[in-house]
Image 1: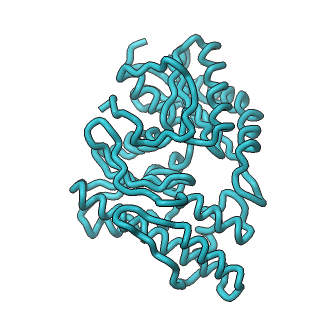
Image 2: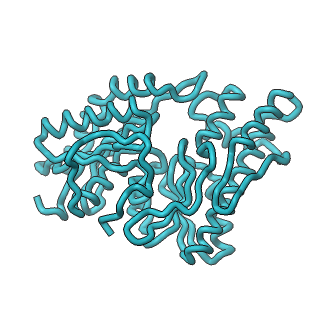
Image 3: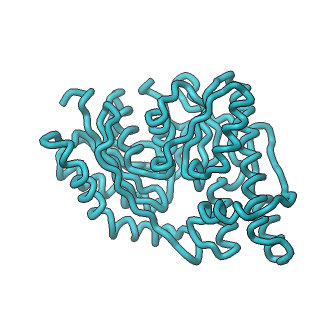
Length: 331
């Protein structure tokens, strides 16, 4: 196997999604299979999500192989990558055990990768951005990041709750279930603006006060759900747009790349695009299909790090690892 022809199977299992992806070192995607744990009454329950993953894992991996078989032909998997963190420990353990099982069965190397780093690098691959400022917004994460030297540098982030989790929390409050972000987006289309708390400190943001205020207004019953959803989006998205603009000014870069599950929100993309045009910068968003958690991004990160010479002495999980803990050895 020549490094340029390497083919990797990636397993994503950090939170609500169990995903399996197969990609080549040239960026050719052969398979992308995933299934998301859902709850109508509450948020994500780690043990239930892990059981969801465990129940479907082998079926999804088998489907990925089947999807890739026609194009791959006689070519075989050369590497297996799994998301080793950050994430929910019960879910991460399922991903690790599945990765170990199939690495042993196929007799191929195994490498664990950082979930946020995988979002960043796969976003670059799929948008062909060169040196962007990353705006990473998912359930647990809200960060403005740039590659500086051999590390990811976090210029700003949430001081409390991630924006995706904030949206999900309010969605549960008003009975929309999990995941709530897409449902809030739909309700917001019918709403009008009411003032809400706006908290930005430098390049950091805080969403907990905003969510508390929305919940209190909802409980009083004087403001329509649609108006609260609209105002929650407008306020929180303006906050992250502001910190992204500051990061662009600070780094003097001219590309902004939005990644993470919340990148699927059309209104957020619209606001960021307007800001970038005013700064003569280019706005990019990860393709909708790959905005959320998926196995393809894990496989791509595995290829980058394995080709750069990284080898795991021990395969484990790291539930609290951050993007800025990762050394950028593949540049």
